[in-house]
Length: 207
Image 1 (cartoon, rainbow, N blue to C red):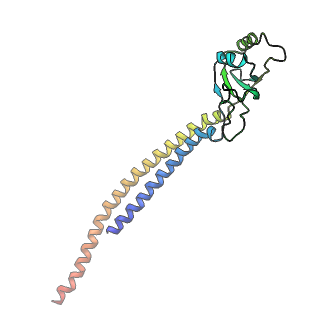
Image 2 (image 1 turned 60 degrees about the horizontal axis):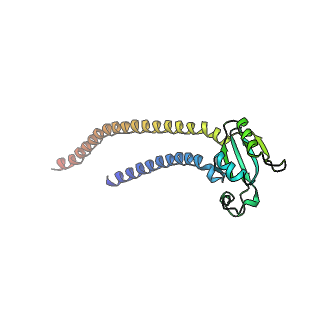
Image 3 (image 1 turned 90 degrees about the vertical axis):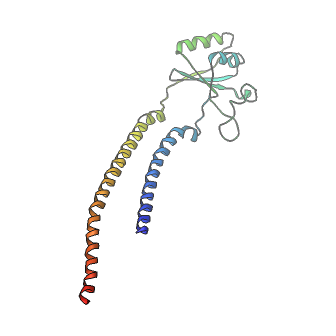
C-alpha cells in the first residue's frame, strides 16, 4: 500500500513539474520578445539636446550628415576624423568587437521640421556652401514594435486561458477522484468481509 502511495505521489509530482515547465516556456517567450533588440545587436545612439548638438558639434564642424526620421527624430553622424576626439570617442565604440561605429552616433527630438530647419540655418550662417550639413528625410516603420503590440496581449490572454482551464481541470479532477475513492472504499470493505467469511467457513465445518 505504501508503495502505491509513493508511486502515485511521484506521478502527481511529475505532472506538477510538467505544468510548471509549460509556464516557464510562456515566461521565456515574453522575456525573449522584450530582449530581442539587445540580443540582435540593435544599436541605440546617445540622446542629446539641440543645445549640445549646436555647441559641441555644429560649432566644431564635426557633423558629417543628419537624417530626420518620420519628422520627429534626428540622427547625427560624426565625421570619422573626430573618432579619437575625447568628446566623441565613446560614440565611435562599436556595440561588439573592434573597429569604428559607423553611426548614427547621436539622436535628438525635434518639435517640427520648420523649427529644426530654421535653427539649423541660423547655426550654419557662417558656413560656406560646401560646409553645410547634408540633411535627409526618411520614413520608417517600427515592425518589431507593431508586431509586439498585438502579439504580447495575445500571449498574455492565451496564458491566462490555459491557466484557468488547468485550474478548473485540477478542481474537477480532484473532486471526481474523491468521489471515486469514496465509492470504492465500501466495495473494498464488502470484498474483504466476503473473503474473510469464506476463509473461516471450512474451519468451522472441519470441527
